[in-house]
Length: 429
Image 1 (cartoon, rainbow, N blue to C red):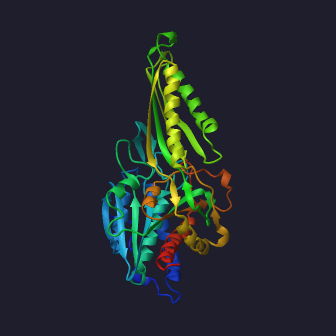
Image 2: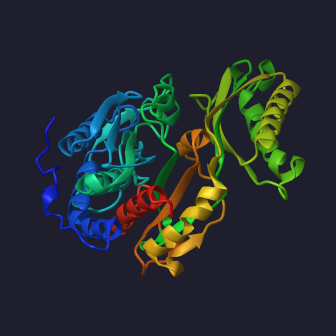
Image 3: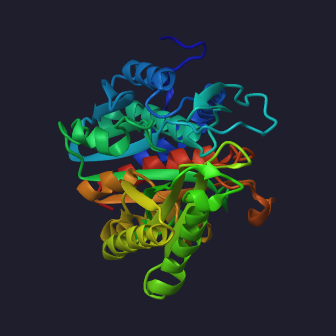
């Protein structure tokens, strides 16, 4: 597949500066900024859901091949991996960007707003880059140009990972970081470290956030099926009402965090996000299904909460004469920033954004499957501000909102952050 705009940088056009690679990277980041914005807008206009990022993957693969990368496509369905071996010996550094969009109907008035429609979970919906993955792809494509421009002077090897399905693959499919690892993304060559970043509304453009250790929560998918006995709505005693049992289960689950576990030690969240049961006002149905999420930072607490959820749901259902089947999936682990790597790279972040613009962040209950990469090698996941500086953060739509929008001036800082983290690590700073 070919695209209407140019993907190839005229590498020879970048001058060699005596100050070294850092100055060259800064100059290249300035020069590629318009293209990064153009790529971002193109991807935003053409969003694709997890395991369906065929157009995005083709755009990335064509770009990397034109720059001279060794390119592997079709990794974990639609993923793309590019390897560039520098002209000088040094470590292998991996950088990751996620590519998938969300089943969200965009409500932002932009000339490049998404008009894409699809069917998701049996319902018609829009498709939108409501979590900024379009910017992640564009920034890493910009960084790819910079690495290629200085290939002969690069003291190491870069491995660029464009990952599908970070938000999760379609039900019944495998995908994301775990599948990429299963298919050998860290082989030939294996990286020493991995860096990633995520744009968001919780910081202003020009700011970077970091958190050593556990930075983002493990996220589990909770599914509960409550089975009763269908009867007429006027004669509830003639059956077993799963709706009432489900309502009591929802309330019971809230006491797990509020009354049963020590949240002074570790925070946790149990949320029921959806309930489905019944189709008519005067019929008590046979069953009710519930879906939700569990967020934790500690593996022992995670297992304990799982046990308590099963006990609570089954016991409440049994008391009503119903049954409850509890299924818990574990698609996201805790995202842990390696403490030593975080400390080592903190001066790089401060030099890149300015000391006052690098903020120590609280732990986030949000989740990331970057966590699986960081289980294999030391990792550092950085937060990139995307809200205009004059806009109040508490009035800004959060990631996953249909009104989510970012300040594109943040993209150049994202490119420079990826470049400087890589270079400083390679040079042993």
